[in-house]
Every structure is written in structure tokens, then in C-alpha cells.
Picture 1 (cartoon, rainbow, N blue to C red):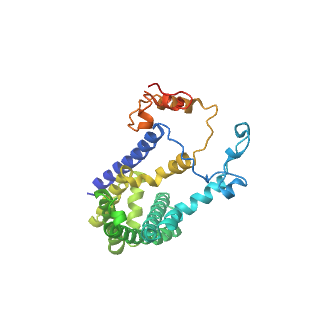
Picture 2 (tube, rainbow, N blue to C red):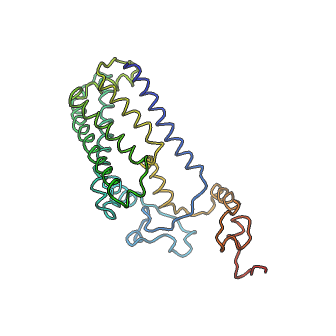
Picture 3 (cartoon, one colour):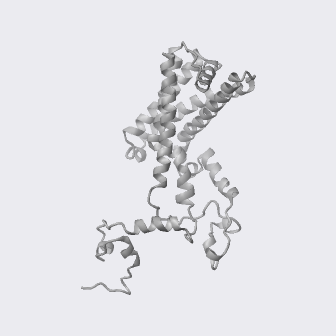
Length: 306
């Protein structure tokens, strides 16, 4: 049975990595988006960053060197990632349940990282007591916070009309999956593997390909649910945990000037030659066949023929 679980784990990891890579490649190959023109932009530098300005304010901006501040970018990203700043500001009741959920996932990821480090230490026969001490703290805390947050989010989706009308089966299923998976992790920690030595041995077996047999059915069941959840995440809206990078850096903050950029020009040319399918009178009424014709048509300068 344990060998079967090892095999499932390898397959789950491969599926997760392949799905993440596929989503990223699909995004990169998408047509270019229309710029939001939203300010402030996180990486703007200098005095303009204080009031949400832009390098476009400069006269002849295209002739001047452009400065990007990674420090200012981090000032926006870190509070958003670690504190869900936007939700805290604009939807405080939701923040009280979604933040424990996300914080629990952060601690769970930390737990998994320290288990992997501890497993390498076990393989190399290096003492790993401090590492495992951190794992023993972050693991249970992460499991419990995730369960509390998932239960809270489930309750909010059921009772809050603003969320309920936008919720579908997938939302409820995902939350229940986390509750069951983390519930199994808590039971395993309480009754089977309180020091996570079994978990460390299992991961060491995965890394070294020395598949040590594990006798606990509860532990193996927990592994199956954990791996299935990890493999499933990239196929759902929860993939925002890595796709948000593109939301911020390419869509919200994508202000790279389109000057001497042949690749970008080629993508734009493809989009401009898409046929028009809109039925809006101000578009369809011009009798244009492509977006390039619409973009270059001035109804004031070129009156339409009756």
C-alpha cells in the first residue's frame, strides 16, 4: 500500500508542475491585453511615486532613460501577499475569514519546506532538531488556521448574499476539500505522527527513491488527500496564487513603453486584424471589417457615406 502512495505522490507532483507550466505558457501566448491605465504603478520611482504619478508626465518621456524601483514594488507586494491588504481595506468582514485561511496555507507551505530540509538532513545523516522544531510549530498551526478559515469562508458563501450569488459548486467543493485534507492532517498529527518523524521519513524516501514502507493507514490516507489537493489546485481559480504575478506585473503595472519592440508590434498587428464581432452601433455602424480599420477611422474627419 505504501508503495502505491509513493507512486501517487510522484504522479501528483508531476501533474502539479505540468499544470502550472501549462497555465503560464498559455498566458504568455495569449493576445496582448489592453492597458488598464491605473495608477499608482508599484514600480514607479522618484517623487511621482508619492502621489501616484507616471513617467508619462515628463516632456519627451520616450527620449529619457526609464527608472524602475523594485523597492517600491516590494512595498506594495509584501503587505498584499502577507496581509491581504486590499481585502482588509475594502471588505473587512471577508478579511476576518479569508486571512486565517491564507495564513494557514502559508504556515503549511513553510511546514512542507522544513520537512523537506529535515529529510535531506536525514539522508545526509545531519542533526535536524532545530529544523524539525520549526516544522512541529508551523505544521499544526497551519492545519488548524486553514480549517478555521475554510469553515468561515464556507459559512460566508452560504449566508452572505453578495457572495452567494457569485458562488458555484466548485467554490464549495474546494473549501470542503481543504477542510477534509487539513482535518486528516490534524488527526495524523494528534494520533499517529506527533513529531512528524513519519512525514520526514516518507519525504526522505521520495527524494532518495528508497521507498521506506509506512504502516499507518491514516498517514497514507492523509498523504493521498494532500497530494490530490496539490495536483488539483492549478486547474482551479485557486491558481491565482502564482498567476497573480502576471496580474500585477503585466496587467496592473505593465507600463513598458512600446518603442522599438518588434515582438510586441507583431502581437498587436495580429490582434488588429481580428474580425469585428461586436454589435454595438458605434462600432458596427462604421461597417469596418477589422479592428485596425476601426482604430484608424475618424468619423469626424471621414464622414460615413449615406
